[in-house]
Image (cartoon, rainbow, N blue to C red; front, side):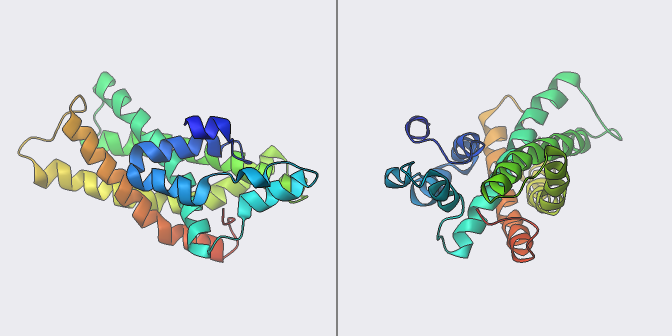
Amino acid sequence: MIDIIKKPQPMAIMNIVWPINGLYLGPLGILAYWKIGRVNQEHQHDEHGDEDDHKDMHGDKPRWQGVFVSTSHCSSGCAFGDAVGVPIVTMTGLTIAGSVLFSHYTVEFILAYLFGIFFQVFSIVPMSRKMGEKMSWGKGFIQSVKADTFALIAFEIGMFGWMAIVHFYLFAQPPKPDTMTYWFMMQIAMLLGTATSFPANWLLVRKGIKHSM
């Protein structure tokens, strides 16, 4: 976090994304930041500021690295929404069809989708404008829905699948949200969600629906 404050990202939303990545991806997220995401001080604004910003956003990364950043950007919004959804379900005592798990699925999916779209809008619009396209926020929202929906569903398949295993098979009584065990299981779920989202993001980048970052 301190390093990001000292060397902010060319795309402002990534100043939020990388710290979230560090929380749920753990050492992998921190390593990815230092190896892939960290801003090179030499590239920060001289007389070619805009050109360098564009280069820093896309860079000359191998495709897998650009897709990984796109995936972690998408997944950070999903993970944040999921984390916000847990206390909402817990405090309200909400159940769906008599199931607490189904209520977690529903609330967390909705919030993950909202935060995922929010994060996506604030990457697509600034990136497009840096590339010379006069994109409106409305058009950016539409593009974000196209770019994020498939990737988000892929993320939640991995995450919700693990949550089901934890709920029905790993424990005699599912862990409660006020325990470290619960949040450790959630972290594993988010890691698996990132893994299942990576192929979806690869396909979206390959089809030109979203940009490699």
